[in-house]
Length: 154
Image 1 (tube, helix red, strand yellow):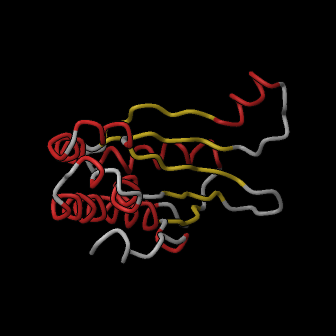
Image 2 (cartoon, one colour):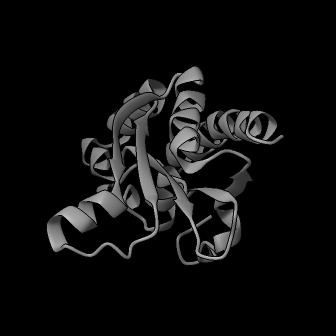
C-alpha cells in the first residue's frame, strides 16, 4: 500500500490494558514479561520522579517508561536502513490516573510508526521488508501482551 493510501494510525492500534497490581509491582512485572519474550531492557525511567527532580513539580501521576529492544527487530531494522535505529527501541508506559484504582499499561508500535511516517521509504527501503518488520513486531508484542493480561489480573 502506498503511503498516500495508508490511513493515519489511530489510538485503537495501540495496545492498552490494565493490571491488578500496585504500581511499584506493575513496573517490574511488565518489564519481566518483555524480557521473557526476549526483549532486552534498555532503560526503565520514572517520568514522575524525573519531573519532580528536575522541575520541582510533584503533581505528575506515577508514570514509568519501560524501554526495550528485541534483537531480531533491531537487526532487521538496521538491515533495512541504519537510520531506522533512531526510531527504536520500543517503549511501553505504565501509569496511574487520578480517580482510577487500576494501573494502566500502554504500548504504541515503533515499527508501525516507522512505516506510517514513511521513515523507511524516504531512504528507499523495500516496502515489503518494512511490512515484514511490522508483522514480526506485532507477533512478538502479542505474546508479551497476552502474558501481561493473563498474569496481571487477579
